[in-house]
Length: 465
Length: 69
Image 1 (cartoon, rainbow over the protein chains, first blue to last red):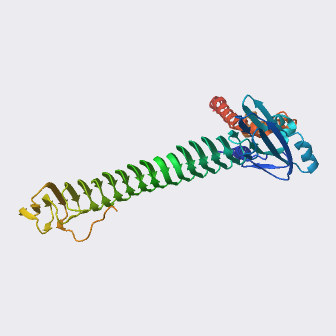
Image 2 (image 1 turned 60 degrees about the vertical axis):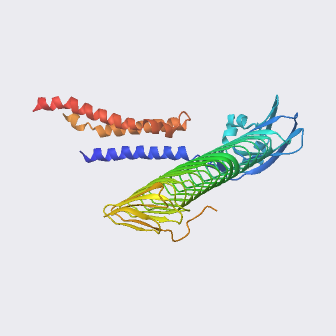
Image 3 (image 1 turned 180 degrees about the horizontal axis):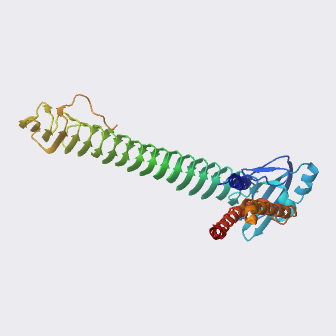
């Protein structure tokens, strides 16, 4: 190929690259109107502020709808029978005269349609004119509404605050949202910005795409759908959380808790009802659950304590820790160990790691691959026990007053039985059978490539206080 | 053959490119179009034009060379 062809090819492709890059830059960074820049939905540059007010008398029960684009919206309760609207106009122009001239055209729009008062500005009209497109301006609205008014706010770029309303419906795109002291239901949708909702008397539905979510003191049921950001909720009714990327922290839920997480740890404390947690990556921690707890984690540890009901836990590549569980326990762990204390209604455990259960009542079935089993009953052992370990030892402590029929095998390995009162009826290499207390439910202990040791209880087992 | 020797695909491509760029720039200055978006849409046509010319030269001149040998 001739050098001229190569040179021209480089020239054409370079030209195309420059055009594409310039296009991409222009698409992503808007320099906006003259005299200011628009970055991330905000204007930057010289600006001047002007104010306007309007009062609209409204009949009792009127709902308020506020529409805004660039600028904050603050709605709060005031005197009955009227809505006071304060508009702060921030105009980005090089001189005050130019800004004042433009600001005089920015007006409050308030129209009472039936029982709905629509509040906004004439931004659309201004932006349809050539001058409006060339001037950057923000409109910050402060709206004082009668007490117990239902409020709807739609905003694009600016903070939204709603307080002391009968109901709240807030949609915002780029900035924080705060909703507080709402006597009825609240609905919040936010795309980019932190969201805080507190003291809501009804149900709360919250959707947040990018930003932290904080929910406190909600009487009704709460639904949170968060994509990127931590979620914290305290003192709520029944709670459903879907969190894709971020930590989930929950405290004091009156009702059931349901968490669907993907990339982040989940921590919940003081749930009066049942708790259900599903997560892909991240530890799950449950403390003080009034009902059953069901926890499934793909890659992460599980820690559950003080659960009144049963616990179903499933995870891999991490450990499971349980303490003071009132109901039946089912645990399945791949590549992880299990450590449990004070299980009141038995357990079924499948693990590939060491399993230690200290203080259990009820039937216990443990199957371990590549790990040992250590079992300590909470009191006299009379329930069924089935424990099998491959490549690990099986150890059982027997408290005084126990009654059961022992069947222990170790292959290859040794069976060692040292319990006063336990009468061996059959012993051979790696096998021991016997009874204590006249016999009873079967206690089957089996070790492959490990020993079995049955001994008298030496220390007090963990108990449920 | 003297004409063929003086004919250069690169020159044609470069000529078209300069001509197109000048016309588009003029139209943009006259407020008739957005230069960047137009360039962004149509700049690959240079490659198409170049490729077409190269193909045409290769297909049309090959018989002539055979005939001459």
